[in-house]
Image (cartoon, rainbow, N blue to C red; front, top):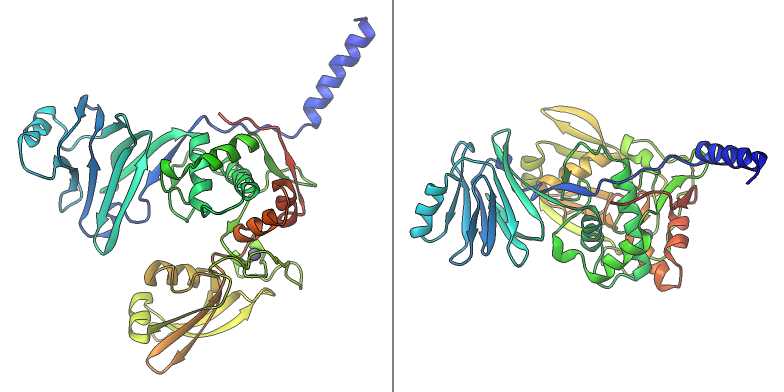
Length: 399
Ligand SMILES: [Zn+2]
């Protein structure tokens, strides 16, 4: 290679470095807080965790638990101490005391099959997670946190499976996989990820179905970037828009930038597409929300409330439609108003809630993506439909 060609080559490499968008490598492993919405002592009531053998105690002292009944993790009344004990009294109790496990941080690992973890907390139904990775049990703020540490690719596949019903088309799974990776790249990597829908649902290793693992492999290193700025796109997604999409302005109680909402015509197969009606007694609503619902003042172009008048402690005030929807979901249950396209009216002693769709209606409509895939669109075309101002790049590395 002559000196001029070498110089040209060096210049090309330097320019390509400056022109290329920054590469965001995802960490090889992620830490996920399990049972984030119900499984810690913040709920105020008794919390009981159960583990089914076999499993391995890695730290503080190695111990294999091979047979016997389920083992219980019990917080004391002040939430300051944890005890690991078999549900039936017997010789294993003595082994726990001898091993010095009472009150310590525990690291558990699967033994031959995924860890089977269960939680029961006051007023909340029992939940189960199968985790094929190490789980750390530690104290924080007077409560117990269960944190799984698992390979990022396994986590992405698990989220894709948790966020997608089993019948979803493979191309829809790929689109979801890209969005999950984008979300991981955008987040503050120092923070532990919650497993509930406040971030993304992660329901355990068994949700990383073979099709989801294939979708992750096919989209590994793919990222959505804003077309003009080339910045990573912060992806929003939801279950069902029921026909009309909103913009992220909705989170701030502001109307979308366009007078006409973007439409989605492929989510009709969703169980949430048709209007959902729910009646709840006025007494229950006002006791649990600590406010009286008055009327909706303003909606965005897609029909989602921006501002709602409520009465609280005798004073009328305006709250954001989005924040009120979150409050209703948290206090009355997410099944009462599944979609942010909601309205309400007082009929005698009851509130009648009407809603369309499921989720906030911003960004990617999961059932709509599935519908497009059924019509023959691939995941690139699907993502282009919901994110017309973004481009797909393959510059990142996963793991
Ligand atoms: Zn839709």
